[in-house]
Image (cartoon, rainbow, N blue to C red):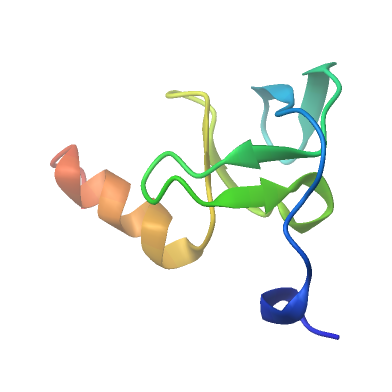
Length: 73
């Protein structure tokens, strides 16, 4: 089963502190939301985030779009 075939996460949304190369779970949960798309992201699948803005992204494309909207790419 690949990522696109996984069932949506069940449970509450987590609160995360995003750091360089890793993140810390502040409040446990099953997922976080992409700051650009609003899509739920399982913590096991979380690969892209901003330390500065403390937000998660579902994909590299979403992260790039966020940078473009902020005038940084």
